[in-house]
Amino acid sequence: MTKAVTTPVALVTGASSGIGVELARQLAAQGHDVALAARREAPMRELSRDLEAQCGVRTWVFPVDLAEPGAGRALHAQLTDAGLTVDYLVNNAGAVLEGRFLQSSTTQVAGNLQLLVGTPVELIHLCLPDMLAAGRGHVLTISSLGAFWPCFPGVSLYSGGKWMLVNLTRTLAAEYAGSGVRFSVTVPFTTRTPFLDTPANQAIIGTVPEIMVQSAEDVARIALTGAARGRVLQHTSMINRVIAKLLRMAPPGPLARAITVLTLDRREAPDHSPAH
Image 1 (cartoon, rainbow, N blue to C red):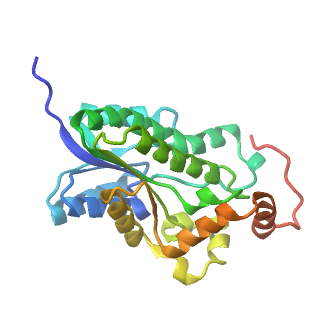
Image 2: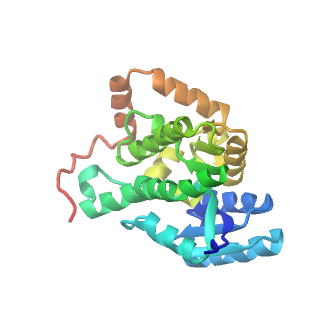
């Protein structure tokens, strides 16, 4: 029986805005055919037309809610049905669930964890066998400098989810060393994207010096360059590298208390009522 011929593609999640769009643009400029995946279809269709016209590559659009249970498996099945195999996986999609922990329902919590951790893990698990069989491939994950903070009041799931992606990448790089597959995780801090257009992020960005705010284009370029050079952990600036080192060295207890004072409105009584 003849084996079906598949087309290798770069799969970019969260490809409807921000860093995801820039990652797709730069991968296409390098000659990769690109599969775009995100919840919003219209901006991906527009990006798809631009990439095909400007870079001469083929593109595919997969509208999918990556926060749904089993989203990674469902997306991988769609790729397989389309005759595509992923040789460059970019796990970029992410969002914050704002508010104190009990202000979110268990359904919202589960969805955010699926988006931050569940779907990236599923996609790696499903795409990696083909890369290993081919003896080549890339898995690039966009995490956050927030992974290194001891706590992140107001967006309680985000820091832990992003730290898990950092540790997963380091572990996979060790487990599959010499396989020809490269694993890289990039940890940007404040990036000028629609991701910042939320109350909690706006409060954070207001305290950050302009010199520390990077463009999505620069973050994407640094991430792809780091992956190409085989860097397992890629910071997007020297400032970010220093901050991460200081955060790891500082006593976590006092630092967590200081962060809590700075990020939560202490005049407001804690809300202990769970959302429904």
